[in-house]
Length: 596
Image 1 (spheres, rainbow, N blue to C red):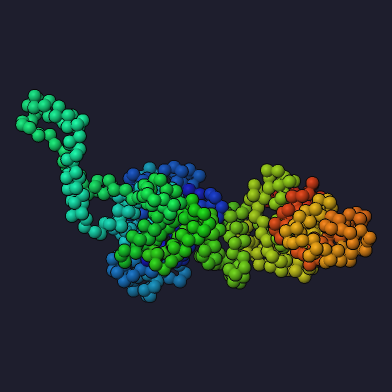
Image 2: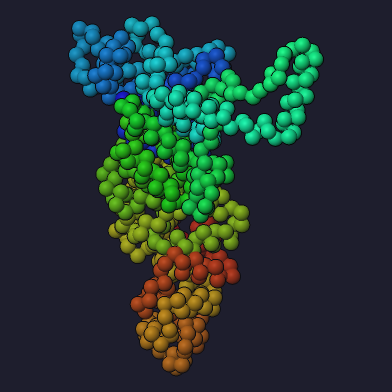
């Protein structure tokens, strides 16, 4: 059984009806406060077997805009019902038509294949009143969904704030308790009770205990409460199975420890992984259904362990019939096909949830192979800025922070994405435009045909380095020559000795700026440029930056190092930064195509 469709209305941040259709695996991504948690909690309200309609009534903040005059309405449609499920829920099952409407599976005018049969549950939460889930088939008269029904469905939600210490101990309905609930442990627990009773001898012989026992017994005799010696004793009385189990703690010996320590002594990340493992272990013990929903499985885990945990959750042996995750981690979102990713955020001013499967399907193969990380990063941003290569990716954040301290790219929620070439830019534009994420593009002016293709893709803002052709031209024309040359020399030094590079570097500058006497004696990059007039220095510097010598300085690290060496931000870069900031602020005047 799987969760096929969810409908939510007037719940928390969801005002108008919204529909979500998760697949066998679904990963919810999106900015903070986008609605991921609310979506999962809405499903939990309908399917949690242990929700108490009286104790867990909806409160004021569960209603959109605190408007308690309208009820919260939630619908959950379950598909992939087994033959046993169909027998169990026979009175409540419906057929689903191609247009999405429902009909009684047994009605004479409708014929449904078994794959079209679904179970539809509803919930209507009126403020201040206890509300329960009900079967939505009209003929059922909103019959209540009972705990046993929900247990059979198998929904299990692991919220981010679930306490692993509680769930990994023997408490009622805890995951750890459920691992052993099918086993009769009465004889083993009796052995523990007997061992406690048999171990009391040394305790009673301890002088302080013995003296206190004697004095209590004498006082009881004087009050005629007891009669005779040894009237007071210690015994294991009234120690239930549950209390015996609760006296046992799970302890763990870590990789660097020789002692077993209580779980409280270990990190939260480890505890959460143990909790997820226990849930999957419980599901694998029998043929029970499990729809597992985990909020932020990356919590307290470094990237390597994030990937290990997700691979474990996605494993065919995990035991879950359906897996739903919400995450802020690119490593988690990047572990599943893009078709399994669902974006939760505002679209056209209203929150919604959309599957990436329905967005730019023609480009899915391109993104799966080449750009998964970049695409996922952009899903969390308010604005995406596309650049051609690693030099802009390395330098622009540095210059942004220099020009606007405290108002950099991250502060403005602008994600800078390296498309790796101008030819790759149109698919990125179409992808983010389809998701209604504002897109700005920064490109060079040396490839007019590629530029026209970007224009056809229609980014909201398209900026071109027209006057200086490319990023290297901007730096060479407007940057501080001495500072850039020295920074390039430091970068060159990481590639080898001067003698290995001097001939191609000297020839590069000579061809670009003209021959000069000082070139033969130069023993570093600043020395190659120092003997020219400034205009010739800048021409030679541009050739070096563009890699005409055969040495490639076009890397993110080198670009960052060059940018950090500049005493001020070049004026054209200042113009770019201001334009993108206006665009990110929603200024309509900043949209369109601009040449700088």
